[in-house]
Length: 69
Picture 1 (tube, rainbow, N blue to C red):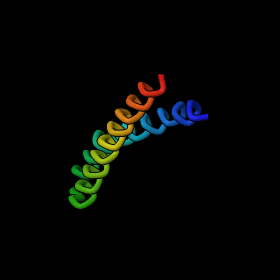
Picture 2: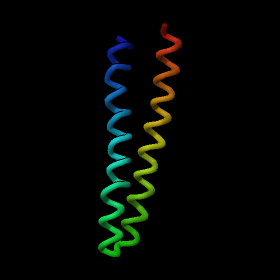
Picture 3: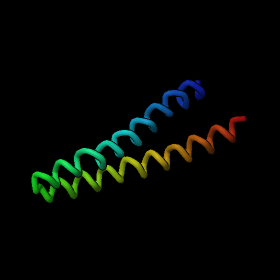
C-alpha cells in the first residue's frame, strides 16, 4: 500500500517542479512586459516556493525509498 502512495507521490513532485519552473519562465516575463509589478513579485515567490517544496519532497521521497529497501 505504501509503495503505491510513493509511486503517485513522484507525480506530485514533478508537478511542483514543472509548475514552479513554468511560472518563473513564462509568467514572470509576461508580468514584467505588462509592467504588473505586484503580480510579477507574487509569481516569482510562488514559483520559487513550488520549486523548493518539490525539491524538499524529492529529498524526502528519496530518503523514504532508501529506508524501505
